[in-house]
Amino acid sequence: MTTLTDTRNQLLARYARLDARERQMVVIIVAAVTFLIVWLALVRPAMNTLAAAPVLRAQADAQLLQMQAISNEARQLRALPPVPPSVAEQVLKSATDELGGKAKISVQGERATLSVTGINGEELRKWLLQARGGARARPVEANLMRAGNGYNGTLVVSIGSQQ
Image (tube, rainbow, N blue to C red; front, side):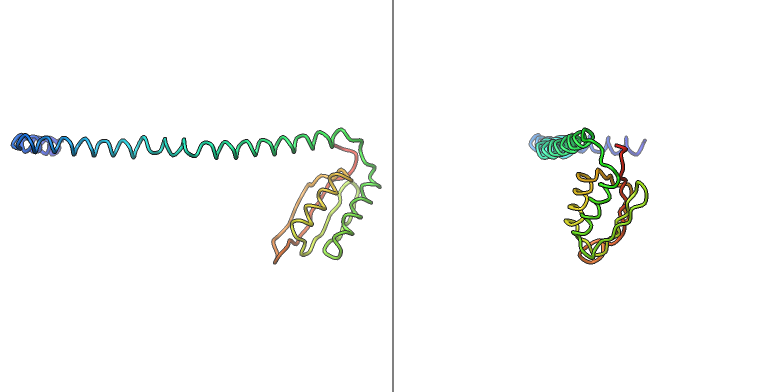
């Protein structure tokens, strides 16, 4: 503490020996440095946050609309009558046939397993839409790995009357 006090006393003594014009320059420099520190530490981050707020709000609004659309779709699907397991199995097999040799399906009870090799994301999305809409199938488990321009692996969906 004495070192700090000694240094402060030395600076004050040196300041007292300066001419009036030099003192004025020191005050201006200290004020400018203080302003710069306050600007960089307090004002600039707040301004950056305000500048980014409209973009972040637009992203949040877009996510909200997407979640509401998904919620509405789920509500509509729940309102539809259940699909008998035999019909659901036919819908899943039909959707799988559209994928050609890239996919194979096996149905066991209330679960269907889709095995895929080299399927692209768009084809998988279309299959899922058909499974969800036509068979009321819900994805339960996905073990997909990226391979070249597509995916390899399995997708398990639940079919049946449970909603």
